[in-house]
Every structure is written in structure tokens, then in C-alpha cells.
Length: 343
Image (tube, rainbow, N blue to C red):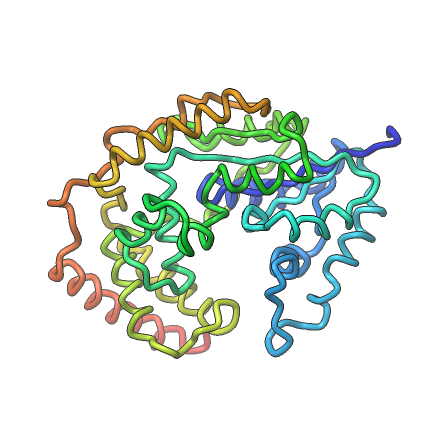
């Protein structure tokens, strides 16, 4: 082992296959260790609370005392790691400001830091991002969510910093130079997830054939009708179940993942009114990546939106569709509660 070990910090972007990659790697820890790659933090609690602590979002009323020591534990785990490489993978780390990143850097002494950013074309990423926020109790409509990106500046843009590639790069480049930033493009849907995994493994020096890829997918997308129904449920909740880490996760687990996901439904697509902006924004991203000195893994053409990714106004969700989805959801919830009362 050399004097300097390398630590890869995978910061997303959101909806760029991060959950799939994390599931494969966590299921393959022994194979990764044999190849000299350690996963940090070493515990599920450490992974859960790392980004919360760095963003100063820990709540003493709901978070355990150990959560407040997560950076100290990461420091000890990093020093004790036996491989010549380590990986930290949390997409929420893309939301950090340069000041919030510094404690993470300080917790990893002796490591040569590299950043990995997986990025998907905007026309697919934004509708998926809206669904993700809806499943985290957001009441924002799809159009409002998209408008927050079309408009420049303001609170909406700051709130969604982690979803904007330029913002993520700007923050992390205060600590890691561009030549140590690896940008992995998500291939078109037709290519399958295996291509993304191979690209990711190429950055980390891992043999993809050695990994356990038979993992459960927990991050599948709801249909657009079902996602809009969940959003309206969030509105109806009002000031109930407001904590996103205590209480509301059960809504996501039961209503979103168990009931609404099973309904299927047509996919969410970007409103056609955002087509021109999306094309221009995509070209700006490609231009920055092509000339920024980053290590590109994949094809920058993957970031150009497919024309079929846009929905015409005639594809809007109707009240009749929402009513049908709601009635079926109530019936399924009743069966679920009666057939499995202890679950």
C-alpha cells in the first residue's frame, strides 16, 4: 500500500442511478474489500446521519446521541481502513456548501480526495426529482418544481442546489481540483443499468463481474397520476407528520411504495413548455464539462434530451384519473391493514 490512499466521494446527482449503485456495492462488500476498496461510513447509522450532521440538521429530540458523533466515527473508520481506496457514496453530499464540506475533508486525513458525480440528462432527471421530493412530503406541483429551475437565482434555486450540476461542481472545486472530479454519464434507458455500473466501476478500479447485481430496486418511480395523488395527500396532511425522518417515512413506505407503486401508470414527463430551456441548459452543461478539465466517463451526448421525454399539454393529469387511483388505493390500504394488522 502506498503512503497516500485515495478516497472517492460520490455525490450524486440525484436520480442518476445512485440508489442502484449503492445497493450493488453494499451487497458486495467482501468482493470490494478483496480488491482494496473500503466502504465508508461502515455502519447504516453512519451513512444515514453523515450528511445530516454536515448540514447541521440533527435534531436532539428525534436523532440518537450517536448521530452527533458521526464525523468522529468516520475519522476513526477511515484511519482503520485496510484498503488502498475508500468510497463514500451519498447523493445528498451534493447539497453541501464549501464551508459544510470542510469538516468532511478534515475527517479524512492522509487520503487523496476524488469526487465522483453521476449525471443524467435533465429531461429525465427533473421529473424523477419531482417525484423524489413528493415522496419526501413536498407539496410542490410538477410545473412549480420545473419553474424553480427555469428561473435563475432565488430561494428555489438555492434549495435545489444538489440537483444543479454547476452548483455541485462549484462547491466541491473549493476542495478538489477538476482533474480529480470524475463525471459519469448515465446512458440512455435502452442501454440498461449494467452500462452505468461498468462506467462507475471503471472510475473506482473495480471488476464489475465480481459484484452481486441481484439486488432489490427500492427507488422505482411512481406513475404521474399516482405521484400527483401523493402530492395532494401531502397537502391534506397539513401540519401533521411534518418531520421527514420521523413519522412521514411510514407514509412513503406504506402509501407510496406498497400501494401506489403497484398501480403502475404512465411515466412522468417534462412539460413541453420547458423544452427550449431544457435543450439550452443541457448544452451549457455539456460545454462546461467538455472544457472544464474533468475526467469524463461515458458520453456527453448522453446528456442531450430525447425528444420523447417531453409531455404535451394534452397529457395533463385529470381529476377522473386521480379519483380512480384514490379509490383503488383506499381499497388496497383496507385490505393491507386487515390482512396484515401487525405489519
